[in-house]
Length: 149
Image 1 (cartoon, rainbow, N blue to C red):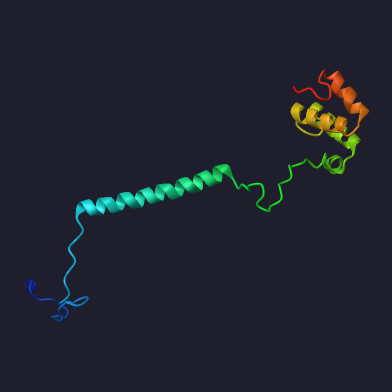
Image 2 (image 1 turned 180 degrees about the horizontal axis):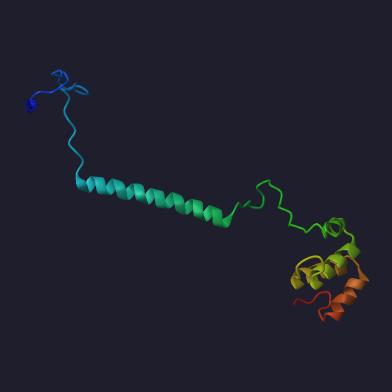
């Protein structure tokens, strides 16, 4: 004998008749939903704020950290390759021959990438410190001690 068709209104589990609990004070006046125009304005302001924040981050990344003179922070030392460090330290102490050697190394690209402007700058410092050899090097380059390139 075939089984009877299930009754659509019959449920196999028990349910309770419950009412949803009211949230907040039911006697308080209800806030009207925001108009589409107000929602759009809110989204525009939020989007604009996000763009300005991202632009600020991008600019600060692009410019890098900067310290204005007189802020009490020491000026950053230039990056000196390890092979030039002993000469650089002696040149900072006022050694004219070390200054000339730095000029030669930078100008000719010895142990460092060639940089003629930096080389000439060191040659001029050495000549100003009294190095006769640096004065001769500047004359051979056709610059002289006080001329600008």
